[in-house]
Length: 255
Length: 255
Image (cartoon, rainbow over all chains, first blue to last red; front, side):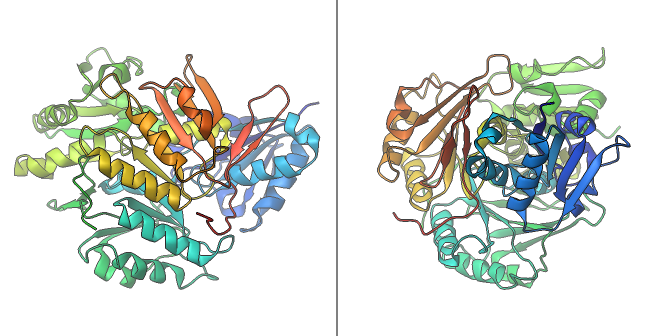
């Protein structure tokens, strides 16, 4: 009775963007562990499957619970949104394996990659991540805000496209505005900014604006923000969303 | 007779990591356009499907060809590796739509996200992209080497994990060594570095080393390199690959 633990991601939410590898792991699981709204995305595949839904912001407890179940012989799948390795559960599981009982290191653990939000938003409107880019979390729960500002400075100064995860939550209402303000020190007012909310889900909403107007757009926990560079282009199309892309060729950064 | 163009990615190579959305687009296509080795990953789904294989490094011509076929009424799928929006074909298609005939802007164009190499490599060995990270291309075909160096400096200086795409090719033998040398100015010798070659494919090979030994590892066009930060941890496990992860919490950057 040796259990296993697999960490998966649901992708952005649309079922057709979950890989067969992920679906196979879910079908085999005796126990699903995850944040409630992510578990709700998973169709019931077997009647005896137990679901352990937890609140947001309890990643380490959730990882510990999943590892305990696996150690007790269950076939456990931890369900993240997006890709499990990008601001999601895989790091919390690794952290608990390192700090937990020695026996957890012998557990059968696998991580299956998924479609992270920035890839889904980018695909929906063109290719804004078409050249060098970074992914930064605006959550200052686990890191000082000064470090986030320093990373925003470095990324914009070096001409990287910036994908902003965790832009806003009820407890963190001002961080996105402060980040946009910060980026204006480095980037021209005309820089394209994309707000992709709930992309691929029924409540999808996409705004494409310029940096000087970015703070007037509503964002929430389901929003992923992409800030372009001086090179990022917006191509108007009749009766369709424009295409936003960052060219593969880059000249010298002028900053 | 209005055609369509869909840009997809094969993911890292294993069929179970290609999304149902991508498989559906491939099954519907009358024409597949792509770099030969990527087309070879796609199982034949219909006898009347035409395959247009091209060489590497002719992205714009390939995009133009695909758009011409779609404009002539064909159902075209452009096949990239990984995710089509990350150092792949989606940006080239957007570029050609912008510079091509006005009528191309009215074409039915869609991009379907896929599993990019960095996500596949990361999942294979833990969660090295568990906190803020960037993706940089080491190809200086379309950008000056000085700009690449500047981005390496900025990323390492700000404590971002770095995923290096296009680390080596026959025409670019020295760039990876120069990048590693550059990163040593910012990061301690013990920084974990992962070389993931052909991950999820039969010829998969993974090396986990420290930055001071990184340039002794073989890399090629099928390799994706991930360079950790001061915070990145390596967790030894009995009889298994270690887990490499970057914790979700970050202290001040000491650089």
